[in-house]
Image 1 (cartoon, rainbow, N blue to C red):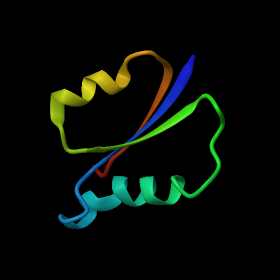
Image 2: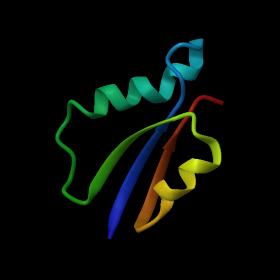
Image 3: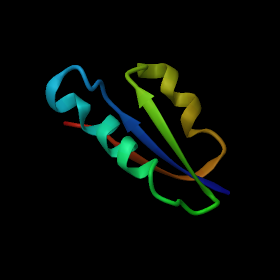
Image 4: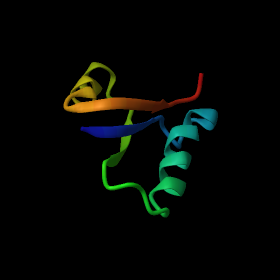
Length: 63
């Protein structure tokens, strides 16, 4: 089963750019074959589809 890393945020709005910054860094590193990395942006409920078909989800977001 896959594991997903979802990086939420908007780099044009100050600290809301934390998720995209983490995505940028992680996208430069080798990840395990069962890990998928997503730049989830700011889609709201549309992001629910990113939670499908995976055993674990790590959510990266500024709070």
